Image 1: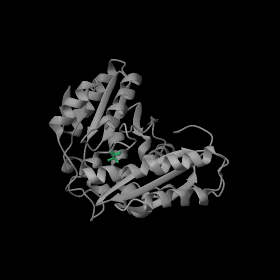
Image 2 (image 1 turned 135 degrees about the vertical axis):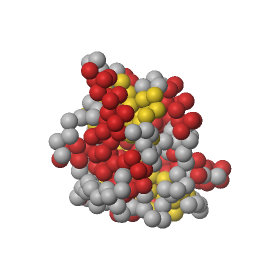
Image 3 (image 1 turned 180 degrees about the horizontal axis):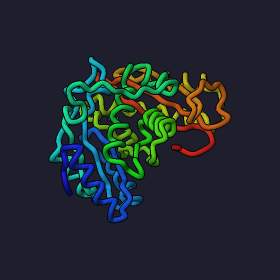
Image 4 (image 1 turned 45 degrees about the horizontal axis):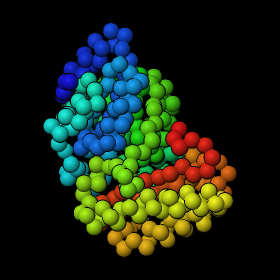
Length: 286
Ligand code: PAF
């Protein structure tokens, strides 16, 4: 497996792989990998002959008060994990390789970014859309793989790919959870044992909502309140948002007649965690 740091190197690698007739699968990450990332890579390996993983902690998607500086980084550990699932190459650029001096081009989406994490993390999706566009242009993959845990991110990227006529397929992979239900996230590392226990309230609240819907409850305000009450009962949890929108359009919805996205962001101590579930009929991810 190779670790390449420059745009020129990865472009050369991908060009020669494609010349042998191989399809290119791409998994963009910010590193500090976990089983959720490895699942994306396994899916990529199943669909494509060559798998490229990028590891780049992207400064433009972090707000000034957010954890860019503290975000966990361990390339050696990541490389071993990536190799174990048959990835062919890691693209690990520096910040100056991606954003050289004088850089001033950004990708901005309307509507789909104006809710949920887009409201609580202003500028976040501008940074995500920009870096993902750059990575797609650099790697030029046939397919790119994203986790459903970041449901809004997937919707943003699918919208961007469609709107900008990008020539690739975005594949959504279901959320991978710890055995007790906590969604895998690089940020789980920030949680001390007491907070780790408290974080279970996210999944617990989603399951309560799921049960209510299965029992026939269709009123989104009742379901939302159930989720809020469940999370509020956990003293270490502070709700950032709990919202229900139509899925995949993210429009306000009062009754669950088709698929809806129940999405939440909750702070446990200083760590902000997100999770979601698709309720109602239809697929778990688009
Ligand atoms: O989901 C992530 O890890 C990041 O938002 C991504 C897609 C790698 C862009 O930096």
